Image 1 (cartoon, helix red, strand yellow):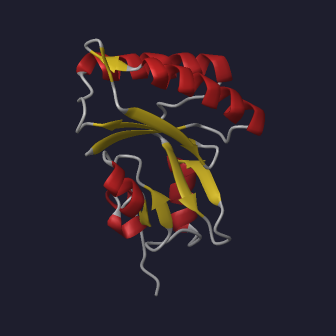
Image 2 (image 1 turned 30 degrees about the horizontal axis):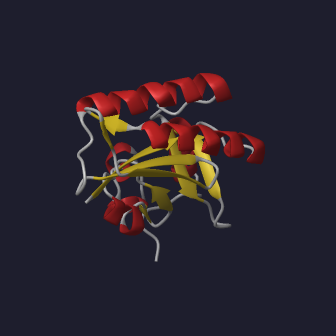
Length: 158
């Protein structure tokens, strides 16, 4: 099984930042190991917003130390690019024009109250932990996500 970790930036990256981040991720990925053994790992940047780290645990499990090293690396990325990757108070979703939006939880609640966001609005579920879920359960309707338990007045529309 491929284990994944999704990190959402607090803003969209520029194409130049994304290029430089890909270089840094490539270098990190080439050296990422667990107890001296190279991890069967990969990464990707999606939508200039999400960093996804992957480890094929059929070859080698990510250890606590290897996970710590990825967190430390991403903290350095934050400093270098002036972004936040550990801010869990931001919600990413698709608006009515099918564009990714990134807003604070307070703004998201306002959008729900105004009817601009409803139970069928597609939200990104960054809590998923494996590659299979990434393909099937990452972008899901609000009413099927953990977000529905956090926000008030989520209404259903057909």
